[in-house]
Length: 142
Image (cartoon, rainbow, N blue to C red):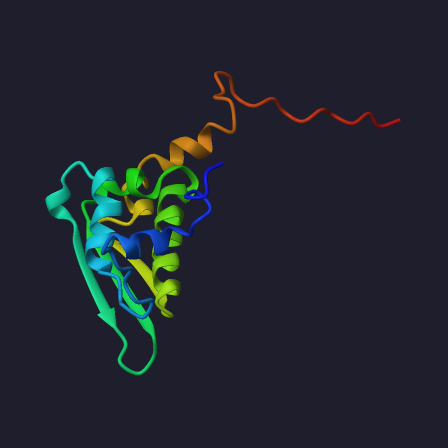
């Protein structure tokens, strides 16, 4: 290993004229959210982002809205995508001493879109019957 590798990255940047931003600087949450969400959207122009900073407390509320047809991709299987996005936003907020809350809005809630399919899913648990149900067995009396 050379001695250059053991030097901290920030000190080598300072020598080159680069400076690191102060820790108290607020990240641009709107652009960060757009960067993280847009790859999942079929129509990125439908993305609406509202960022509200609390004056009294170090809290940020971010509200998202996009086409309901993109919800499955944005949320991901088991909510993995949206959880990863929340984690990145929380890390950015925590680095500047803030707390962040992410709310996602859409045209149709995920459950409403699939109401027609719901009865089918409940019928899948029971096999379809082609014959009428059998009568109960008769008890013998002596």
